[in-house]
Length: 92
Length: 196
Image 1 (tube, rainbow over the protein chains, first blue to last red):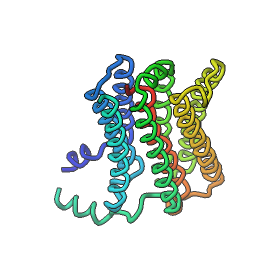
Image 2: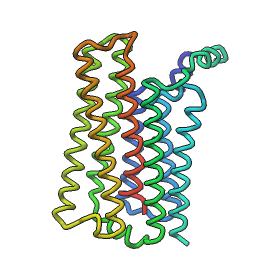
Image 3: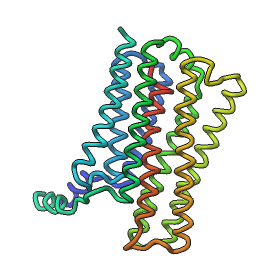
């Protein structure tokens, strides 16, 4: 049971390594000149994952009242959604 | 598991670690950056060819290095908070200095990029892309400087023995601001340097 809890709550070093790896993926998308809505959504999905990792684990929102997670999570989703909408608009 | 979940829910804090006033400031900053990001994206939707053409002139590798530096700086700040919670004042100070070093490296890399653009004649008035690029990145650059001033003050107070296991709000407050600077860059980098 302790092992399950440990896995569900990665330590700061594991999160740091994950953030570095996800950043590498974002950079690769740029270097490969990947364009179009699927890639835009892919890069934005990485942004949301990284933002959640920082907010939940480094800013410790995982251990505070749910309202704080709703505010920060809502900000991430709203900004990501607006960016996605704008990029879709440019495709029209 | 059920017991663990119940215990965790009982230990939820009312607000995140650090000074509540700083968190209000952080939320205000995030709102401003969010509006800035949306403005960039919608401005791009009106001129996608122009944005894509000038985005190609940016130093994406420099942007990658800066992203890695800020993420690593955030990690160091987390370690500083963890250290002071165990009463390890000297370790807290060392981690804060490490975070400061990552911030200083960011300033050098980004500063070099900005100087390079300036020497090429790039100005705010050059075109819409550069207006947004320079505004966004310089605005963020100023936040990195602000964050470093806060981290330096925290490191100095840690060195003076001002923090302990029982009282270390200042360390948590400084770390929270530094994470905000990191969080914002995690959106800025793909938006301005990668997405097209």
